[in-house]
Length: 304
Length: 325
Image 1 (spheres, rainbow over the protein chains, first blue to last red):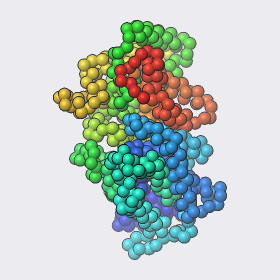
Image 2: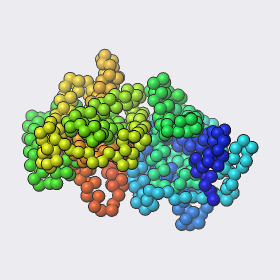
Image 3: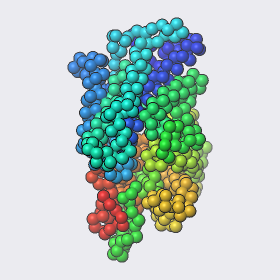
């Protein structure tokens, strides 16, 4: 029924190279959408908290699982889950920040990385314990099932939606941070938290909300991903390492940089799948190595 | 990491106490196989050496590598392949594994030292994941099955390593030599420069040290010794698999070091013993190991960042310089 949803299957339906090419490019664009959304969240969190959120992949997995559980346990469908799941994941993030991360701001940022690494292991372990390592399918919402023939290629509606939705999310976050009053507080607190606090802004609250927002972004990406990839406890840890490479390439100095790098590397991965499939797993890391040689600070980075 | 400190400020009595404890520890390891299952002890020793090698980098140079599984698991593959497929004797196989790990360390270090702090951690993690994918696809690693049934062979053509006591004392000897090497490195002028880089990198640069070269040298040494541990493990357990090159393995060695005490000589050994012991205990229950590992991480970071040995030093053996928390 939904075999066209999986990677590769499209190339088997259409044996023609051009369409295979476009198909892989679409897969690349989809992967890029997730890289962009996740590296965006990492950049937002890192910008203010100076914490590399290793749990970001696990929170993405949590978002997908909450969507799945809402559907199977409570019969709540895709569209409400798209709102509810990020809220729950964001709330979880707020609790984690209040209870633990807020105690780690004054010490070496490596401890934040190690703490969130532990958190990622626990989250992954819990879901693995209850749901095993095999994935569970999450069907595409009826409104977006089927596909559209664009003339030059067949576009599954859901995939088109994911690309559009991720762009809206990225653009929205960019506007929130670069163009709103709240965003200006946030950017100011990134530059000089003490001074901003002296002006009467509640910086600890801002930190908590930022972490919550970053986590919610990961949760949202998870729900969007659920119908494309299967819902599995391991879906996050496989992704997070690639996203780290994306972050190293883009540098975490700029929100826009994180977004652009995410899409670019996704597309690069898609292209590699067409020309040299064996290397498609490696290409992001190879690009990272090249960027480190040529521009150690990253493409958009300020700090070395 | 800022809260680690230079040692050498202890009172004389505590130095004496330290050496007594080290002597007792070695004595305990010498008689241990008569009381404890040797395979378990050897696993412990391999991981303890791995953690000590990792600590050389994190504890004494201040670099957090999230990719040490590459050297541990990579060396295991090289040794296992040389011994099984080419029929090399164990000592030559281990040597090849160690050299391979050193080479991998040189390459990974070359890229990673271009960035600092958490970027360094992320780069090592990404490169190590790249090596993992390479191992999944490369024909010589045997894919999901790994390399199994590696013969232990005879050490230098004489000592039969299939005898459980022989291989235990061989592993113990390699472990002690490895730890001694680390101790010598740390307490050499070279080690002092490493510590100065850890404490204040800009200052070390301003004093005229080419910090990048020192970091790379420390990285390669740490990788080499991690490789020694991995090669040894491949010979002892007679297999090399993908498990040893996963990022979970890199995380595990961080946990061992963190739990025992970053920047202490004995900490990683104690941390490794505890983690290996914990895993052995959990293997028979159905409580998932990852949850236990993750919880230990969180608790360590939140309540005792100095680790077990670091806390003991802080409380009972006098000040450790600028230790702050």
